Length: 153
Length: 153
Image (cartoon, rainbow over the protein chains, first blue to last red):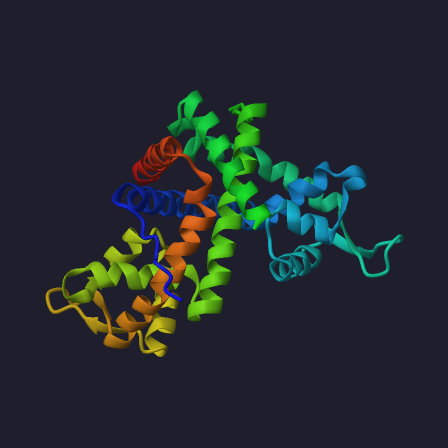
């Protein structure tokens, strides 16, 4: 069987490199700022955000993994660190013996509330201030299309 | 001094979450595929690509860090692993005693050549197949604007 590689054309190649540079640079910058100002990387911040918005500030670990687009092993590692910091605790799920819940603690909520203004300002400065309203809309549609494709595969 | 937080409006919030989900999901998927098929994460693949395109297949470490939007510490860690695998070697820079060069080895070039078709197919399947030609152009412009803003700050 001969499989022809569908190589990227020059426009696609340029887009791919620009996307890699922008997305990696953006996440490294936000990580560095959150680490400096709140003592956590962005992935931890996002876990706290998701829990803060959930009913009773608690979610199943499996659902949290899906919501944050994290692998299970990466989420487990993060949850252990967040629990050691006193920001979440893990509980057995009362309705499913195999399930586990992550629960945001009061201390975790307070930490998140203190970190949020500076982080949101960073997201605005490094991302939204560079884009027109039309580009904000385009980026949402592009991102949703890519996420849908990933979920379908 | 009172600093008002410029919170994200609902459209920006939706765009930001979609972008996070898509970019993280995409990079985790490509990482997993490259790890499975070529024994390396995407960041290592990209280092080998950049070296393969440089004159004499060699670059200064500082330039390589800029090109791959990596922090110096992350690049140093990656370079040590790539050197241990026999894919690159590090040399002192002849014109600058403080500089260091990364050089792609023949074995590194062969590894990259073997990994490229499968990886490019993955980039196409998970990203470009989901986008219209207009969206490819939009994503490039958006990414370039974000990268420019990051470099200016």
